[in-house]
Image (cartoon, rainbow, N blue to C red; front, side, top):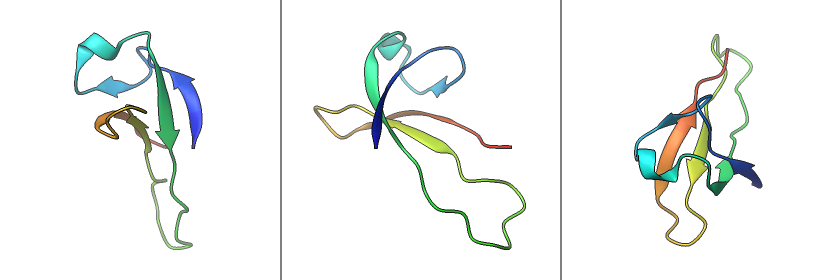
Length: 56
């Protein structure tokens, strides 16, 4: 996990978090996956999923 500022590159489930510092969570890809796994934005206080960024 690392801290990241929520911006328009993420699909936010709750727009009130736009511009706030959140945590990003990433997952390891399996070798046979065609599309990479998304980055997930999480509120560090509530551990609630706030948004995501799809991988290419």
